[in-house]
Image (tube, rainbow, N blue to C red; front, side):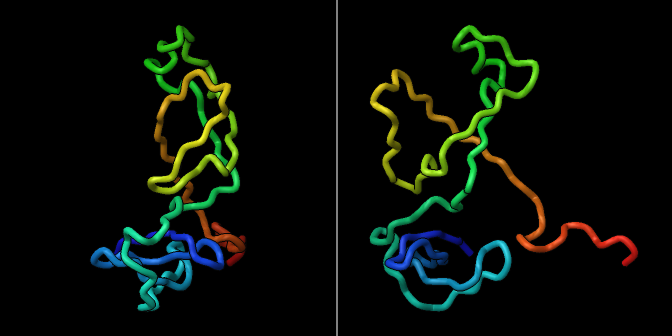
Length: 129
């Protein structure tokens, strides 16, 4: 099953891609996603969104030797962390907008995977159970 997140008149929605057609779904892909069968439209006519909507985007700078060397910088002894606004995350085919004063923009892609329990549940058993 190919899962998509798309723009709906009521906001962001989850769906599934089936033979080039986006179909609506209920639930979330992290817990209980179920296709409803309702056709949203052909893939080319549906505005896809980023697969997730993060509250925070945590970045790590100069996290590999060749990237640090590009600018003549040493590799930091500790992670160089910085934040980006959640609005920096865009969907497929969307424009990447950056400030006019930017002199250089480097395309990068990195992935973070957070493994945990769904919101509101405990990832560990309660002591004594």
